[in-house]
Image (cartoon, helix red, strand yellow):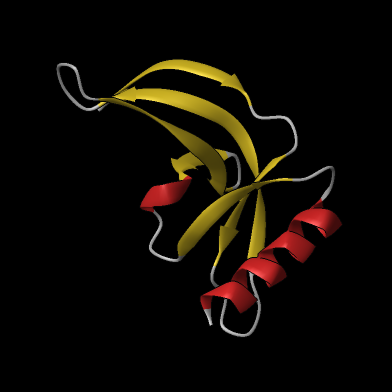
Length: 86
């Protein structure tokens, strides 16, 4: 796996399933990742441990990405998404 390019991810958030409520993490950037010849994909990168970035959608409790102006609005969208899943 090779990261070919990174792009800004202003106002994007990754939503993860928590025990009792969703977990909202800021997407640090979008990465174009090469998995092999002609197998590129774009994924959000999130802080997984004190400044180390990981691919959000490879984390087991990942649910979705949302666009929101701030963390509170992102959390509200996460709550609505969780209700739709039930």
